[in-house]
Length: 293
Image 1: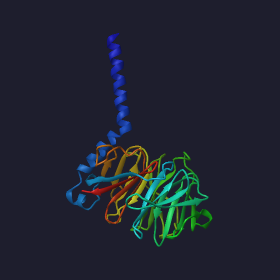
Image 2: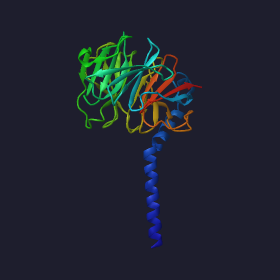
Image 3: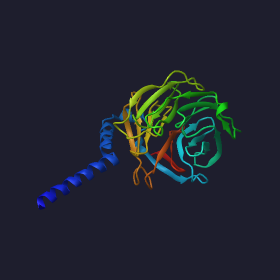
Image 4: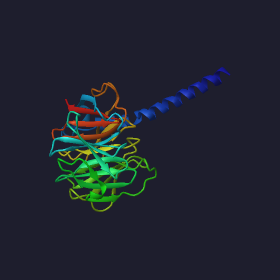
């Protein structure tokens, strides 16, 4: 009897350990670390190399405690950042220190999840509930947007789960395309050709990322190397992909690592500025800055 109880207890412990490995994605991190450790010095020097980044600012953005920040994009023309709210349809402009500069209602939108800064004052957003990608022009004095005034609205098609559609959105200027990320079912990276203001064609599958993360929350592109950053809030990971969409480096978004005072509860957006500084947002209204070295 005691032997049976002992075996059942051991089995329960193994199940708990396996569950912890899955939830914390320790298996994934081991795989990513192995890939990272194989990178030669010249490859590391030519990349962002995420292990070199440390958090230098971790703040809440006042006035948005009830909102749900989602995605993040850097505007090189203004030196500011843009995020969207998934609760109220808002486009929010932020300073590089996380101060709200303006909050723009998007009339007619439903559940905004993605935002990208394109060319010549054009921007793009995705609406997960409406399954749409929209482009529009944003002026310095814009205080309200209406969907009927958008330049273009593209139907991205239905998803298996209406709340697990396209989330990540990023502009790849070098290749004149938008990058889109499907959150789940499957976790997938797509490309969509664009001219800087309008998109053309259909989304094309580039690579599944389910081997490395359980969800995909956001994307951004490093304009210097062309590498892609993929963010997962469930896996607490930010992964750098090379131009062949293979993992190159990563950081884990947990307390005590890379200068974080606490784990990032639900990382939903990532952006890079021209100097290579890294910015993130998390629900509900948290803002982070990471710098190299």
